[in-house]
Image (tube, rainbow, N blue to C red; front, side, top):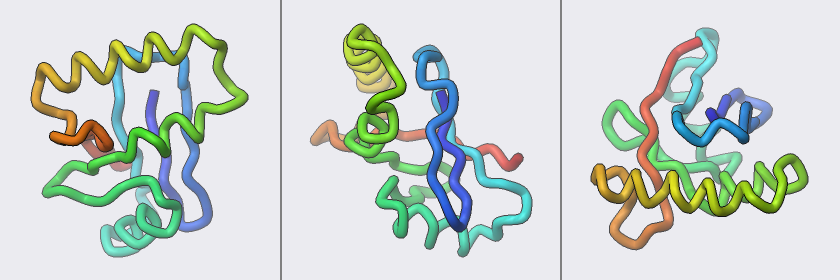
Length: 101
């Protein structure tokens, strides 16, 4: 699963793939525009070279696109992220690396 962030939209792609997670910044979107788009779409915020993605935003973007079993898989993904130190201490954000596409 990954998030593609553009000036106009935040899109969750491949929500059924719960074994990988990242954020895509299209090549034509400058870093400052990317930061502004993250905030404008309510998805998360930069943290160094990564993005702290709001867990609630992922759930919201997945709504209507995944089956009821998805939540269990997503919870498992978050538990794995927590063990790796990629989940915020309050559990509201998960760290994702940024790929330029």
